[in-house]
Image (cartoon, rainbow, N blue to C red; front, side):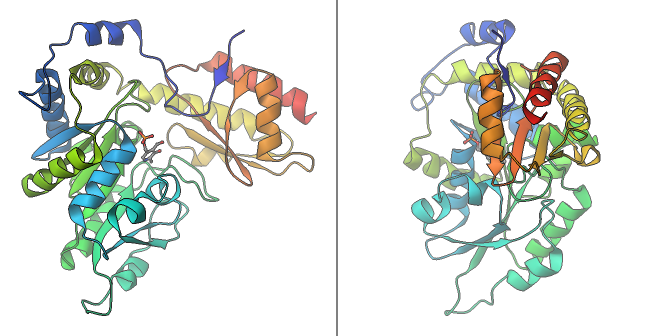
Length: 347
Ligand SMILES: Cc1ncc(COP(=O)(O)O)c(C=O)c1O
């Protein structure tokens, strides 16, 4: 029985062509003499993002952690949106691993208001933590009450970068789904990336790789970031095997993200009229659909369980919202199966 898996774009299996690219990759020990395929991937991503270089790491969480550890010192503070992945879903890494305090600003669409950001930057005083980093997320996944997968407008990111520069504060972009924003908006990756000093990029989400993320930035940052990657245990050995999947994905799986975005819109527009669900199809900008559950008899948890019995997998995002993510391994047939299942469940 086919399972329609809308839990995340991380659930994809590598295609035959991707696997072929992996098995034929030229390999080395990246920690010793270097791995040529990893070096090619790092150069490719640095070029894509217009940065001096990039390091290959196992996960988006580690890429973000490398960035925090490289830009801050214990006792510093970082500014970011309250439901940003780095706040909500990274198990408190900023505090636990790097000793920094996270000060959060609420912006359900991911656009932290400039005036509030300005007010949140601390005085340079012995009494205050140093505001050492501002973090933005593109696309903004949105774990709060707002819609998900939003494309933060280029002009807004530019304004944040200008404000940060006035205060000599670096900006880190959690670009786990940056390529979704690129395809949704038509803005080149390097233009978004120019709004940040360091950028993380995930290969294991919409791009369809089994593993891997990169952290890119300027030369001085990269030196600290390399040490941080080493300390976190993220410097891998024959990782060209995984980098080959990344090179394949950047070549073949970027433009097709538009299909995921179209499917997400289609899904939102068929879910929205169902009793007890609200999805705002007009607010779906990339591959994430947040469905607010208003049904008197159901919660996101009960719907998840009922859907699972019908071989449809989804995740509750919070107490009121169910999340659907489109990706390489779901199609219009899977959307049709969701609708049949929900018709049965919601009555
Ligand atoms: C916006 C965002 N940033 C970072 C990450 C972390 O990526 P990983 O699961 O590879 O650690 C995710 C994962 O879903 C994400 O959605």
